[in-house]
Image 1 (cartoon, rainbow, N blue to C red):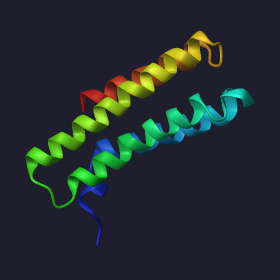
Image 2: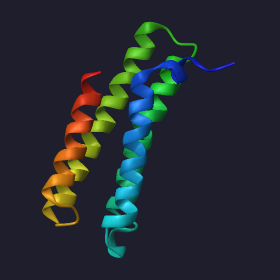
Image 3: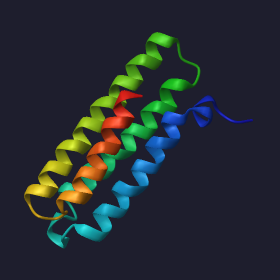
Length: 109
């Protein structure tokens, strides 16, 4: 029996974003960020997905809305991490823009 969150397009979109963020930290970040920015970004990205799932199951609409707000805040945290990565020249402007746009679209959902 599938859980409610599995039918939510926003959850699937968040999963896709999460995959990209995890791959990004593996491919583009230097070793000295291995214990600083990389895990912070991964946790924030994971939090987007996990809060959508947690809030959707057995909760009131008001509670679900709170969890969606937590997801939104985590998305904003990922955006801030993108800005740091761009300023430190870990990612180029095209990759930054692509991920930024994806988070912006996800946040509006």
